[in-house]
Length: 635
Image: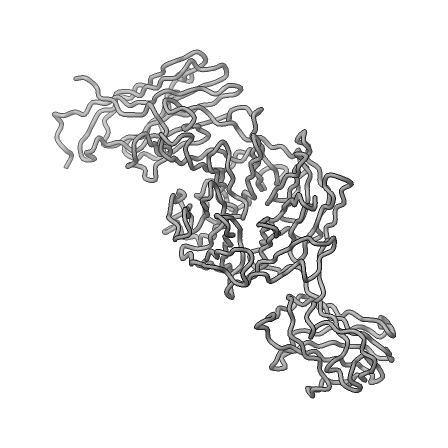
């Protein structure tokens, strides 16, 4: 009897969610395939190529561009790189601490700002004589009246032990945190070592610092720097703290206003610019006239009104989020800033996040909603629509109402795997190229089944459906975390025709790299597309697979395409060249067939290929089969 055909001659539906069921013009899987550009065929996307030339020595997590077209990048170890307009990479400095995944350019002051673990770096005067300042803003002094006082004309004599009497302690409520050092003016150093001890309201010690007698000076402010920053609750609803000053020998004095009382002694309180976070992130974002920095449960807001920041123009706590949350990203929707926040643990996983909606002016957020699926990671705005990743899925927020789930990444359901799945996504893992949203996924994972790379979501015209695909992979060729290769994707960024993707792969000689895709890129060297599982609507009825057939525009030189199939959920593919190495389509071919002649209940089929300089154009892929209508259903 006449054979029936099933397959595709349009591929614009993209990858389906399910292996068997899909919508019109969908297939199950593809890699490096451009199925959007033309509805009647698919071609091959440009391949990624490493561009940093071995210069990059850590995982790049953010990039920015200045008006001249020169680009700058920040790595996770705090290294800062310059990318010249000719594409040459060079390292220009480091922050002296771990990077915070944030680098941004402000054209109004011609500076780049870079986040570290506890401080902010800067590259000054970008279009002039540039100056790199890795520790541009490390710490600042409080402007609160109870924390900053000078001019005391009397003295207080230090005791040798702590006494909680009012005259023997200095009480304050701070406006900034975390506290890193406190300055006290020493009048007469005497012969003993000085110790500053910080207490809370219940007289619990939060930290103490001793300065040896040899390092003390008369009539000088002496700074007592804590070994680690001390967290505090800040005003206006701040807690009350107090400090004590003692000496090993009772012959030292400090400056105070009231004689024999340190209750109003001269004092300076200093705090780090940023809080050392659990998630290790300090995302940065320009919004209205402010540069916003994620600062743990706070949003810091910097308006560079002068060259060196003060607590007036670098407001560490411009917005305060509920306890336990840490900022993990920013986006803009209409006139509002969307602040994505998560709860992250150093061991184990939270499943809790939130998005806070803020106008940048109000003392608190204007609205918020919880994200019970998990951390709302890599939040990004495209066409005034916000997208983020939570719990292994892409979500979209069109208005200011609750978002909707768009797509779940494959293999994110790790049930029965026997492995605790810890998967996270960096802040800068979405971008737009050619009008299509690109999503890099994941950054880090313990799930060995997740394919690392850049996925795409969108359409090139409104006549065609929004589709999803697996578009770009890291240039070393590895897409799975093996448990030993530390495979990670750090960020993606698109500037005009140029797409960047950073990676770490310890199985690669250089470990770190940044890939580029631009108009000079060759097609990806390999590609594949696989059909949905087909059983002709009756999984119990045996059919006969006769052959596969594919058609193309005349294949270019150095291109080969082979056909493949799997019957009844086999674990491995059968290829057209399994028994004959020449059973592939090559230069000039327009059609290619593969004989099967096997019974099946269900079957999958597809194409794989390689190319070099020119992309092939595949017009159709079909299975021809006999439904065997006279055959009975299997028992």
